[in-house]
Image 1 (cartoon, rainbow, N blue to C red):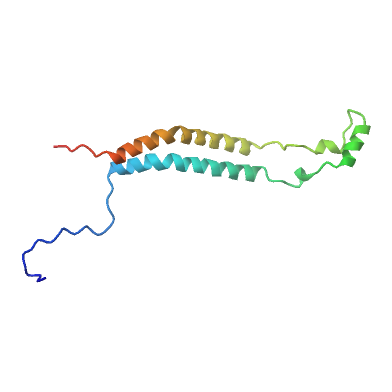
Image 2 (tube, one colour):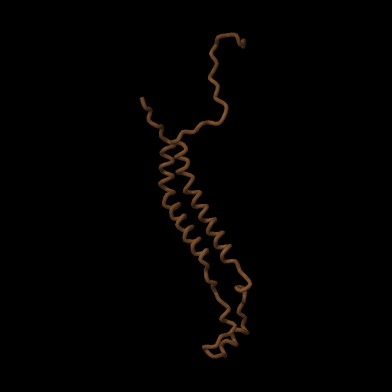
Length: 132
């Protein structure tokens, strides 16, 4: 083809990033943020519980059968080695506060997930009204 001819050329697509409308950004934000918050809450639970309940030297004492048999032969009010053997270690304030905050984040994520998905899909699927 000769470039000097007057045949119309098809329009070229603009090169570069496509600009998204505020409506599309809102729809994507409504769909992604509750899921991301839920994943963050789950990972946060795992991290807080791992960090705050790690075994330390004081909590690794194991009760042996010898300790329990001597405890049965002692007086009821005497202290023995079994007093240091606890099934559960007490939680710290950091552990409790972290779990409460992450539980609330999980509740918010759970309650906003379905409405966010529905609203986001509707915003993406419908065209904005043209103003004249």
